[in-house]
Length: 467
Length: 81
Image (tube, rainbow over all chains, first blue to last red; front, side):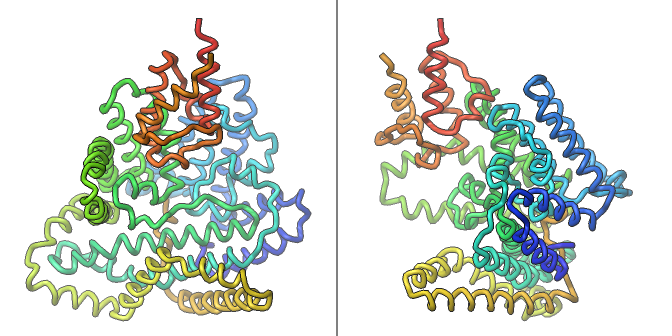
């Protein structure tokens, strides 16, 4: 059951209704039940593993007050557990992962690890209620692909309070539009080009270079919108994952705006401890901590050469950015005339550096990425015809819809017409507010119905569901 | 006399390159423009050398705001022989 299936939406509606009917005291238990029912449709053995890990970590949390040494041991064991599955996926038969692949393993393992370390560091007290703890780990809107919520933030929202339904519903509808209208319409051209890289050169490679990051952003942020909206309908608001990432004018700015729940997790549990340990080592300590952190971000997606290259490339970018930061700031302070040009150039450079790294992210092998980057300029003059062929084969309309949709996404997120519309109608009389609400809900229901029919035949999984 | 706040404020102004910073107890990284995860530990190291004290990772990661940082520095200074 995934987020674009009609069955998921029906299940969500059922859960929202039952959750509201449930007395406040019983809601955490209800969320736990609903989450395990969801997980069982994936795989009962995987659900059993999830339950065992939850029990062990819960018991360890209570024992931590008396046995401090347990925390690092358990954090390492949980990391080994996650790595074991990632390593197994590399073997031809997929080893243990071929038998059981725990859904959302990368996400729930990180939740378990952060709980152990937060209790160990005294950030939060050990959770006394097994019910609340198990509901946090298995919370179904977040288990497929995050966002990775911190334990303290989740527990503070229990028992879940009923929320206004309009905003979460609009957010889910917007997420579905991003996925089904934008990402899935950009995907055919991207897949066709990446599938035949070595027979292509010039123009089609440029197209894939620019299109894939847009597809990835629409896909993953759409998935996050559905996850956050679904959580809110059940009374738990998860952390944000994106903040208009492609508007960043520096690499560090980009990483503060992209997959934020993962990057802040790694900053807190990997980068900060390393940085503290190496704090007397000056620029070397800083560079080392950044490198480990960025490689961890890459390898979290899978233990492959191309994810490693993605991590290393971003590490190099970020080290240069950080070590030159003060000098650049001083230069722009002394030369204010350059400030505007500087931020524009910074944006252009950041955008292209990130897109180069995304080529490695998308390519199955480092050699594919190098082929794409190495043949962008070769035979460029006559390659327009190649691009035309790819577009004809994969659908001119699909690409046009995807691109127009993406433009609407960027403009919409930049100017937020929904916010000023809301301001406008919240000042108006009650009937005006309600007509806005009801037309918004009607439009979303219509959009949902259209997209569900549209998607029924050719549902493509979310790019971030596989981690 | 307790001069912790004044001295931390000087460190903040130097590390985050902004002479207008005035510390408040409820201040967090969100309130200071140049304060991010990349230079957070630079500030911690500067405070360690300013007061000749040492922090642990657990202490640093569980700080929630400037007020808690000042209280921690006071505690460390009081514990010094």
